[in-house]
Image (tube, rainbow, N blue to C red):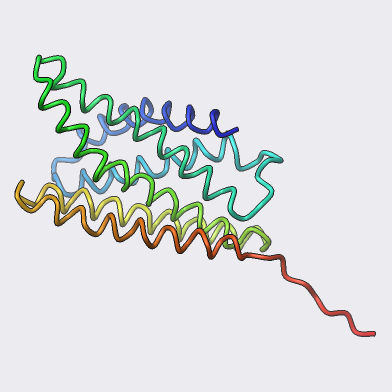
Length: 197
């Protein structure tokens, strides 16, 4: 199931390329374009998880959704990073390819992971709740993930090269928060009703 989810995340990149090309042709404003790209990637990563894992009988604990979302994000980031690294590599610039790969790992890979984890957290937190509550939680999680992803994209394009690592600092802080969220989801238990005797 994890391998299938990882592969689904990888395949989501192909769909993202087509959608983002369409957005690029339709939206002229650069900032708006980056926001729509962030939304596209977060929605497609979630669809990949939903198709493979969420309706499976293996999704039987609150923490499962969070794990599957992270695995799909890692698959997505793996292909995306490869595409970014292939550009300079195909031009014969091995050093630039290595630097690009390292910078993508520091920033973009972690952003994908954190944003997808937020969606998984929202689903895990409402694992034992009514489906309406789950849908609301999903919409909140997706909105938060898109906002975080878009904020990262916009901060990167508006930051000079010397300040790039400062932008990445909040991503690392988000990873620490992610660890805390894991513990919160692990503590989720079904509500028990007390019967009157």
